[in-house]
Picture 1 (cartoon, rainbow, N blue to C red):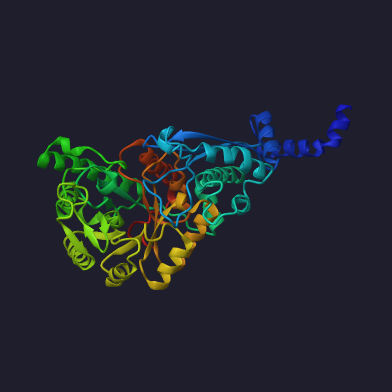
Picture 2: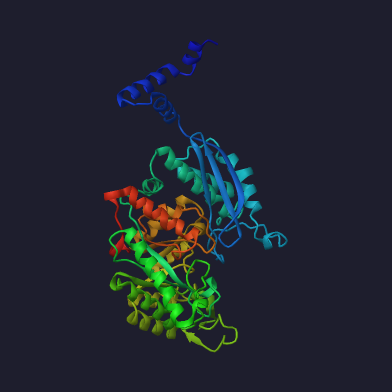
Length: 473
């Protein structure tokens, strides 16, 4: 075959002429590079290969990482994991072999990607997110993704989302906004964990997290500074009161002083905020995670102290009075999971009081049916969004729409077992969630999300919008 015949067969003459004309119009100083890039863009992107592997998360527990290849590049994603899983969330597939990683290996999920998902998706356009996600759902054939594993499906879904953004030549947050129909990407208020307790730490504190929210900042960069300064002041406060040995940190980076009283912990945080000088610009949020210490219909506030456990039980009515007092004494604007995940009666009641935002985590598990029930019964007024509880980017977008249509707040959340993947940072901006919860300003896997938000704000420049006082909209 001659050169001319080859050019004619593949219609290259016209394509080359178009590329040269574009280079001339652009007055490029490097025509070869320009023409090369122009020709590359003219080729539609398709998925050519998907390769998964087992890596370790921030706790040293296995999780899934995926490299999704297109003819335009390679796009990597890894998935987080929680300390526990609920019956209403998508199924995280583990190997169960106690002789390997204590049963926590994910070799089955990795094999499902490499052998089954890969075969189903090769040749697909990565910009068609909903079609890619539906193909995996159809392949799995179970309600909670138990066949292939939600950890397998989500890793591929996120990697495809990144590939789709690259094909469109837009930032990831912009691609997510487009997929969701949003036109107002917004930088979220960071909810920094400053004190860790419950199952996230080895202290005696029953409550799982105390967070600070710099809602009075004018931009994300300032919010990050406010939260970080509060965190460092808190270390000094704890050291002065009980010594440096009480400044050990929990799994998400919050300090874990050996205290058991809610008020004692909140007093430490209040003093740290006071030392920053920001005062009214910083609010407080609680993640009670009450399911962890609910026994029957009572709450054991000393469940972390074996020698005391059973001596400090509170009824649901006692807890309501406690929350009312705390909200009047401290600048608390949000309480997550104030009661057991099945105690709809008292969650509805405390929501009706309007003392602060009531966030559903264990209550909802990012499950569309649970969210629907909570909306119908006015059981809470905010969703804690955990991507691995859902399983695909498309379904994540749908549950956020569901919450937003009910005029709920949305908190995009990390998990206890994290990786250095910063996807949830772009997700929170693209979906304008209002708040992001990614742990303390400490530990690389937590900071990667906050640092990505800095980069996004810088990229948006004068168009950057920080949620601030409008964090619930």
